[in-house]
Image (cartoon, rainbow, N blue to C red):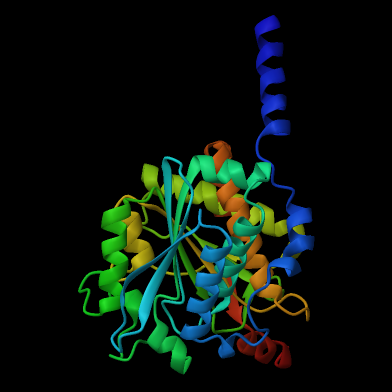
Length: 328
């Protein structure tokens, strides 16, 4: 009986003391860390590089590194933070017209720079080693188009590596050997959450690593992290989060990373839930902070992967939905 009480006490103590993430506080204070325009189409390569330099100059613990060049010679750059053993690799805007996560990453690193001595940020610094390629496809971003200037969809180039941008991402995976990967995108369509009729604001997925859609220790860990992110988002957009619908694509980087032994999650920003400026960027920011916190404190290991399959699947396109209503 005493040993049972001791275990219960330790479990409760862990829940109360693990981490320093006050998710509502960070959500409310997000406007203090906005670095980007409301219209993200205006956010070009030179602007992003300037902001990355500013963040590095503000706090030298955040490292800035050019990791390669695009087809047209624009620099592709990485911000790094942390001295821990658990390594994370994130990449944004591999599709040039999907800019939300680029804005979210800039806000995250600006937050780190401004709050380095707080318990929450120090905990992340001590436990994690975070690497973020911010704007992988700068040529596409300059034109606000999906593909690079070769006409290649970088997210279908994980095997051939025909584009320099894909080669850079693969090189970073090999050099860093990350434990977790974050494949960050925007959804172009207007989808619903399952059959609820609610607009999909964020879609999440732990990509498959083989055609049979099997689980592996790597993918199970990715499912756990996806559950953590979903539960964090439910604080603000409950009912507007779905599981991304996609079959196994070995040419896609998320699937390939999972196959290469990196626990990888996909985060797709969809339709804003409010009319507030930077709504989707705020949700990207919160998603990343919640994920970092759970990994840093080991809480990701306690998540229930079975809850992953309970996340409603991405539903029908709104165009079809409203057409169906018209014929009822």
